[in-house]
Length: 156
Image 1 (spheres, rainbow, N blue to C red):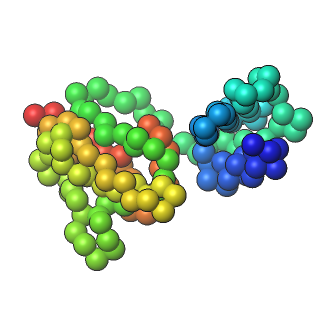
Image 2: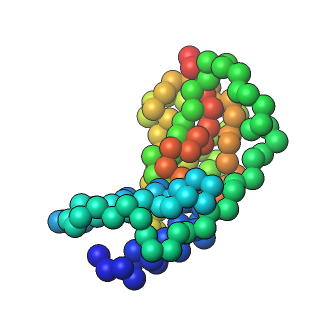
């Protein structure tokens, strides 16, 4: 992978507030991780010697903290359904279709709860737990990161 490609990926990471990026190809692996509070990102390319610092640090803007996030979370026994990938979150299979789930919907491990679009591919996301949806944590059409909670489920 060429340096201009890595710089383009870093620009995309900045524009979309992505903190980690990993790419595996046939004979190489690239992992980018943005530092916290203006720190220097780490870049690893397993084909070459590890690069631990780039020539120009990527500025990182502090993320605004939503007011509800400032309160310490109470353990309610609910389970998060988390995003298995980076992409765009959609609650329904098409704009005119009904949402897959709503608050109060009973789900099983095989229940499709949403779609995440990644690189023009629509990926159905399954609940993987049995219970009842208690919260929807994202708006339709919003970007989502790997591991970001999408729904809260009260286990059954």
